[in-house]
Image 1 (cartoon, helix red, strand yellow):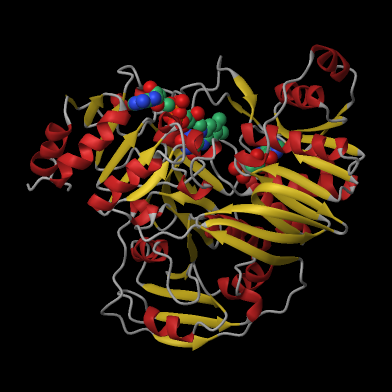
Image 2 (cartoon, rainbow over the protein chains, first blue to last red):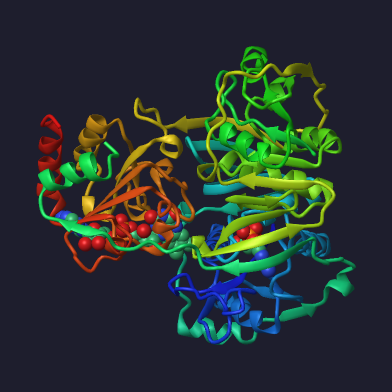
Length: 249
Length: 313
Ligand SMILES: Cc1cc2nc3c(=O)[nH]c(=O)nc-3n(C[C@H](O)[C@H](O)[C@H](O)COP(=O)(O)OP(=O)(O)OC[C@H]3O[C@@H](n4cnc5c(N)ncnc54)[C@H](O)[C@@H]3O)c2cc1C
Ligand SMILES: Nc1ncnc2c1ncn2[C@@H]1O[C@H](COP(=O)(O)O)[C@@H](O)[C@H]1O
């Protein structure tokens, strides 16, 4: 089967972000970018399925500015086969992104779409669930295990109370959680090979998708800060402070 | 304004976040309906009718709703949504799994994880692991919203007298099947509603060593949480994880033991009222946000803390 993996380019998870001084957005200029960590896990899972002989082709898709080609190259260097870039605003909303991936899904006919559970910039946690709704497909969200079982995939989902096991009939959409796997690093030969793999470039207009915004960002601000407090040096002192100063125990 | 709140429950009891979501709904308007979809939930719906501020309880009983499968629930909520200006669910794994699918069916851009309500169409939500707060205005006809439950008080199950109305289930194709679950059972309070939490990180070194935290938790009536590193290392189950991609908590007291304080962990706990950090590395970033810091080895500190708590105030 074919697997489609939507990936997003975001500020690297190790970078401390800054809000622009005009409070309009988070500063993206001259900031280190990387593939969203959850998307790396989705790419890795697709590659493992191919290594297990269950998948023939892995197609990456990203929606964003031309620079997002770099992120596709990263995924191709990990082992995906080809990429699709839909050139659109970097801040296309999850509904718009889901509609574009929906259109690509109808063109490419994958049996499985693997996404990250959330993009660590907007923290929306919506796109995969929306895509499954648009397609009328089953959804396994926040998965930490995936097994192909004939016409089903069985997934283990990380839920608030523990773990849940669900059988999804194929075709299906799944969104991956951190404990599904440890993504590999691309080797130098694979980075070289990735340069030759094809990337198609499309536009929302070509796909016939309207991605006009439904929400307006009024402003973006730093959250109220928290100051360091005092140091204690014994358990008795800590308990005394918690009882008599903070009055929380 | 009429607002529909999707209740999260296990058939017998509401999950606590539902009550906080009802409080958030009350800040938007006063005509609040609560949907209880499940199997055999009639007695729960009668309890819900007594929640302060709720005017109507919609109940639907059908085995297909028993396991919260979004493929089955989304068409049901879609069929009800057009009577409402807002549809709210808690930003728990339940709400996150379900509401975006409803949003897609209704062609609405959902607003995730709101922490404040400025007006009927303008909301505040944390982005970038809570390192920025975005104020967002929606122009969709129906607003679909998940609520950061720690940012709102819980409504009380008392004083209300809502009407209870049965609604029909909506036929749908079976796309997925629930196979089973492994829920963590504990006598301790639930993480997201506990007033005291003690969490352990990689510094704990093993799952067995968490018993030191459990002892203090029991002395304080606290819940036990963990960092991602502790969960990944297999010390404790996944549902202990606090942070950007785990649970968001805001107790009166949060005690972080052997946790360095990565931004992704802080995202889940920095709104706690009082933060205590116990760490042997005085440079650990957790000390920058702790009200009380104690630079010490946790293996001597935890028994000492247990002993000190045993003394009378
Ligand atoms: C996309 C993404 C999402 C993430 N989501 C989350 C999340 O939701 N929650 C989360 O927690 N993390 C999350 N992380 C991981 C996060 O970045 C950190 O790696 C993690 O929080 C570190 O856990 P830790 O503090 O327990 O471990 P470490 O950073 O290794 O810190 C261990 C601490 O223990 C101290 N210590 C060791 N021995 C002792 C001792 N004997 N006595 C006292 N102190 C001791 C050390 O000084 C150190 O400060 C995420 C990361 C990514 C990339
Ligand atoms: N612009 C985008 N391009 C490609 N995939 C995306 C994009 N935005 C989100 N996704 C996918 O949807 C997942 C969840 O994102 P979100 O719903 O924004 O939290 C990500 O991990 C990606 O797999």
